[in-house]
Image (tube, rainbow, N blue to C red; front, side, top):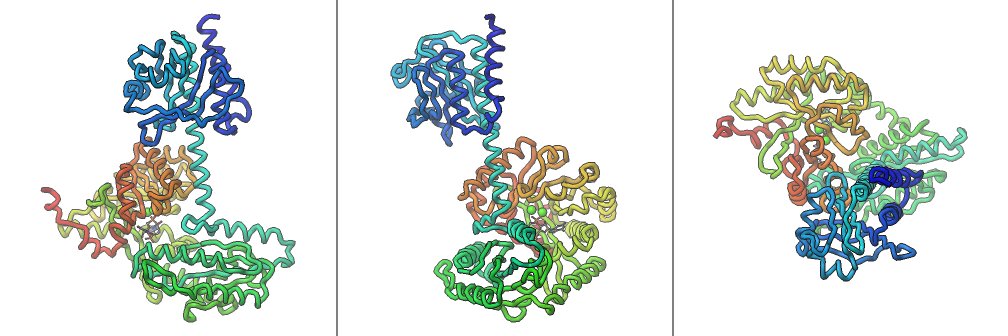
Length: 620
Ligand code: C2E
Ligand code: CA
Ligand code: CA
C-alpha cells in the first residue's frame, strides 16, 4: 500500500472509531483505551500512553497506558512521572513542536536524558509524541513508544497528531460539560446555603398545583421567613457577618421539624420559604411557626460576639387564599411585611386586610410614575478600580429612590414595579440625564472624571432611536458620548437580535463602549455575544464571593477570563469584597475590580469628595 493509501486508511479507522454512535458519552478512560488501542494496532507499537501535565506544568504523569504485550489493559495506578527539571530538552520540544519524532531515543538530544531512568528499564528505542490541549492550554502528551529504533513515516505521524487532536477535543468537551453542569446547578440552588432557590421553589409549587385535579384536595401552605434587621447587621459588622448570619439561619431552618414539609428554599438575600403540603390545618401551621421562632432563641455567635436574631413569618394558603404560584408567593410575602410592621418576630397569615396592602403595589407604582416624571430619582456612583485596586478606572451609575414614606429604596425594591408598569424606558432616560448632569458638574468644577458606566434595561435596547437620543443628550451637556459606557445584561439581549444589534452598534458608532453585565448568569449563546459589539465582560458577583476557596467558582471565573481573552474583551469582576478576592483576581490578570472592598455606591457629592481629583493633577 502506498503512503497516501495508508494515510487514508489510518484516518478512516480513526473517524470510524470516534464517530461511532455513543462514543462521546463513553467514560473518559474508555475513550482513551479505544484511541490508544487503535494506534497500537495500526502502527504495531509497543506502548501508547496519555500523559497529563501537573497543575504547575513542571511534571507529566501517565494517565493511561496501552501495552501491546498485555492481553488486558488495566488502568493506572501507574506511578510513572517525568519531571521538567530533569528533562528540560524534552519538555521544551513538547511545548514548542507540533509533533516530536524521535527515531533513536538513546541518542536524540531531546530524549537522551531518559536513557537510564526510563528508556532502558522500559525497553524503549523510538518515540512519537504529540501535545494535547485543553482549550488554549497545553495539558498533556500522547506518547507512542516502540521497542527498537524506528523511522516514523508520514502516515504514522499524521495519525499521532490526529489522535492527539481528538483527545484535545474530548478535553474541551469535558470542560464545557463541567461548566454547563455547574452553571445549571447554580441556576437551581443557592450557592451560600445549598438550598433550593426561588426558581426551583416556583417550579415545585407549579408542579404540585398542576398535579391537582382542581378540587383542592392537596392544599399547600407557604411560609415566608424573613430575617429582621439584616441591614443593621450588615452595616454594623460588615456584609460578611450578614452572610454568616444568613447561612446560620438556613441551617437552623433546615433542622426545624415540620409536618408536611416539602421544600425549604432560599428565595432572596435574607429570605427563605418553607413549603408545606397536606398538613395545612391552622394547628400544624402554628406549631411550625412556633418551632421556627424557637429555633432563633439561641444567639448566633460571630467572632466571639453573640447576636440575637429574629425572623418575621408570612403565611399564605393554596387554594383558599390564592389561585396560582405567583399569588401564593406574593401573598406570603405581603403577610410577612405585615408581620414586620406589627413589630417583627411575628407570624401573620394572609387575609383580606393584607390583600389591601398587596394592593399598595399599585400605590408604589403611582408614586414611582410621579417620581420619574418629576425627576426625583437619584443616582449613586460606585468606583471601578484598575487591577491593583489602587486607581479609579471608571464608575458605575446605580439608580436609587428616596421614597417620601419608605426612605431610600434599592433598585430591586422598585425596578420590578417599573418594569410591569412599562416605566423602564422613562426611568432609564432619567438616569442618563442625571449622569450627564453629574459629568457636566464635575467637568465645570475642574475635576477629572473617568468614563461613567450606565445600565441599560432590556426595554431600552429595543428602542431604535436610543443612539440618537444619547447623542442629542450628550450634545446638550456638551459632553462626548465616549465619556459613557453602557452595561447590558445577557438576558437583555434575548429579544429581536436585528433591532438590538442596530441599537448597540449605533451606540458604539456614537462613541460609547459596551459591557455585558452579570456574565455567567444568563443563557446567552456565545454566537450571539460574538456578533454584538461588546468590549468588556462583567463577571457576576455570585462567582466572586467564594473565591478563591470554591473550586467550581474558580473554574468558572478562569474560563470566563479565558473566553474574554479569546474574544479580545476586558474583564471587570463585580462584588470584590475581600483581600483574598483582590489578590486572586489580580493574579489571574483580571483587568478591573468593583465591589464593597473599594466602596459601596455613594451619593454623587460623596463620590466626588472621595474619588475625584482636579484635572490638572492628573496631567503631571
Ligand atoms: P448591577 O448592575 O449588577 O449592579 C451592581 C450591584 O451590586 C449594585 O446593587 C451594587 O450596589 C452591588 N454591589 C456592588 N459591589 C458589591 C459587593 O462588593 N458586594 C455586594 N454584595 N454587592 C455589591 P444595586 O445598586 O442594588 O443594583 C442592583 C441592580 O439594579 C443592578 O445590578 C442593575 O442590574 C439594576 N440597576 C441599578 N441601576 C439601574 C439603572 O439605572 N437602570 C437599570 N436598567 N438597571 C439598574
Ligand atoms: Ca451593572
Ligand atoms: Ca452586574
